[in-house]
Image: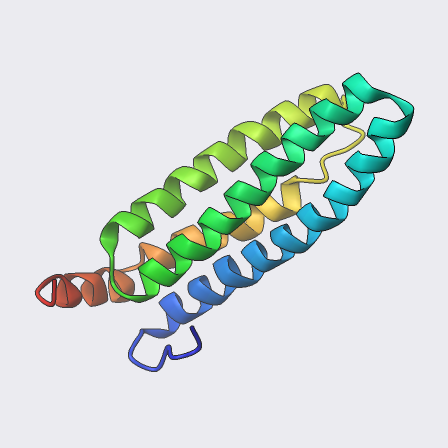
Length: 137
């Protein structure tokens, strides 16, 4: 998990962004679970919806961590999957901004950080590293 010496700097930074983001997502999900349980006690239908959304968020955070670790191993499919996650994040950010009518936008910083991590994965140095590791598999 912590051995990144063979990777180019761009990929190291990208890996740590993805990994820390996923871990923070797991932490937020666990906190959200407790919140949803409290909400179920007072408003069951809304609480169940929130619980479902929190479970989805936990699954996505877990997937982000697993994909980041696979990307570190040189798996190109993991890089593609993380890029797709950023696309999903963009859609959710736009929906969130539309629903909040410009007042919220809480997911915008998270999206921008993920976008930086994605760009770093596709820079020429990172690209060359993936091509070099392609022969290993």
